[in-house]
Length: 320
Image (cartoon, rainbow, N blue to C red; front, top):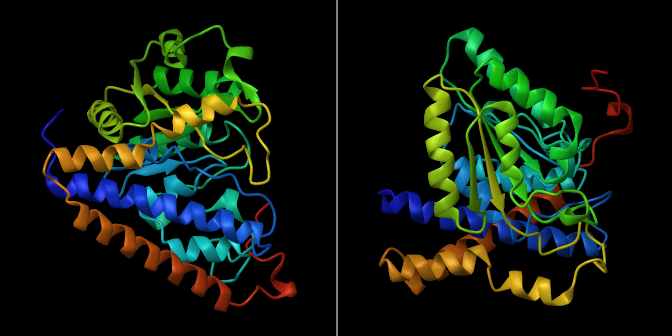
């Protein structure tokens, strides 16, 4: 393990806890009927988003997916504005009109979650080209799922980024299921990162539930991209504990598989690892857990007390 400072390790743990508690509360509020529309939760995948974003500077960019709450929090997004957006309130990131799948904050380099599978790939290429043309050394992380790597945008977008040596790191979060279809039904490959070879770019496969492994792999790829050496593809093998969307009964998953992955919980395992390293005591971890719980309570209160947008505002901020 590369030498990682204590503060960064503790912040990674704090970020993962904040993501988990945000998502668990969203699940509860959705079941209570307080959140309209669809939500796709990130529970179980916290290590990949956290480890990847920990390798970025504040002025770097990310593009996200429809399962993007964790990415936004890891890049610095505010949980109160996120919760307000999910509640459909005017104080939300999209003034309550975008919902769960469209949270963005360009001031933080968050170019948006996306409801279209694979649509973040060309957006990431455009942002990277912009950085190149403006003469900055900013890097873009493009989060995508396993299903997205079967879309045309994956092949076209990565190929062009490779040819132009654009500063993009593609973080493929392989949670074994594209919606309700197991990847073994749609892929002959064991490691989806093998597809990088077709584009002539580096490939890495890591345990996506190990935040340190993700951080180290992405940090190396970010350094290469920032140095002008082009894109990389990093596959994070992980698992979504909840269904494709809230309310999905997950009848397509074997029960023993779910239980096996619960034993690989990225937060529990990282907490034990930090304790073994002498970085985080049980008391310290408990304080972080309570701090996150208070933050999420405040976020829900903020959302509940915020106004809905007025009907006459429906077409404001609409550009297409």
